[in-house]
Amino acid sequence: MSSWTSYELDTIAAEDELTVASVRRDGTLTRPRIVWVVRHGDDLYIRSVNGPTAAWYRFTQIRHEGHVSSGEVEKDVTFVDATDLNDEIDSAYRAKYRRYARNIVDAVTTTQARRTTLRLAAGELS
Image (cartoon, rainbow, N blue to C red; front, top):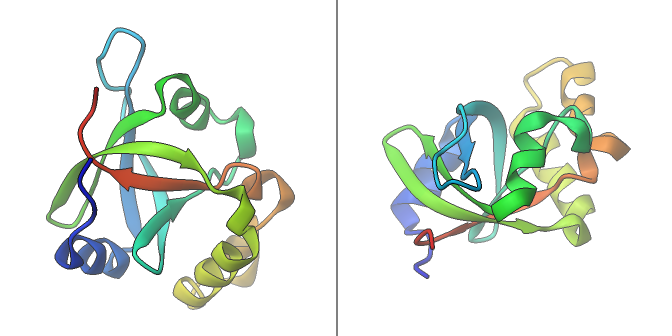
């Protein structure tokens, strides 16, 4: 499995949105969804504003594989649970999206959203 390049990390971190699609059981990709993305160190993280019941999030839990794109970057990824970093990821969301209304940013830091914190591990799909 490869890792993110500095260019990929910088490019995605500079964008507000990331498009994410999960791999279905049959190997095809689900319909892409737009989510907010944050960088913490050399990793990228996403969450479901609607918590674990959101369809796109539920699909990430089937094969834990997918594809993301943001700016000029497209990458196959593995979705890795990262709820152990919730406080750090909350801070990253608040810092990056502080120009938005507080209630919008608060939506991605709720208890429900925190339960869906995923690290995007760059690499090849199986």
